[in-house]
Length: 257
Image (cartoon, rainbow, N blue to C red; front, side, top):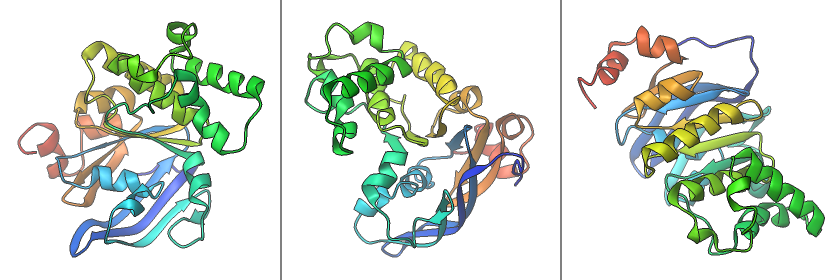
């Protein structure tokens, strides 16, 4: 496993283990995640990809009977040990789920939701945040004349971009994306992929995907998970052209998974 020592790791997981009850779901994960890069996580269903990504902002804490050991270092703090303000952590580490899940509110109120929680109340300030967040996801021109309309009236692809904008509205450092295009048509998928490439100029992005072509298109680094283990982490071009582990090659070539 190689790492780029010239780039700052915003996350560094060291000997991370996780259990659901008696099931050992993540096994001794050592995984640095570099700042302002896109890291893709691939692997067969049930291998621990989504479990891992949900540890990074401790969303996994909502699952009953979860136990973790090891370290998840974020900005120099081990978030498994420190007494953290989870609202503040999730402000810095935003998440976008598999299917766009707008709140049953207006487009404007969806984007303003996070900033309001964090104490921003002035209308002019919220207006600026909503506009800049929607521009960041190339949605502003499509919705600027109907900000008071229900967000649930948007198309599936627009809803997913809205949810990315909602995550960006709190100005996170990291954006976690758990299969963000699996429910979308090819045109909407392409828009999200183009968006990811633009957003990495400002944000660190971690994306879980079953689509290996997508991983090769959008990511700088790719990690291959299998049965709860991180088998390989390297530059995406190397993972897909010359992986170090036979299991990685077997998965990428379609021999299993």
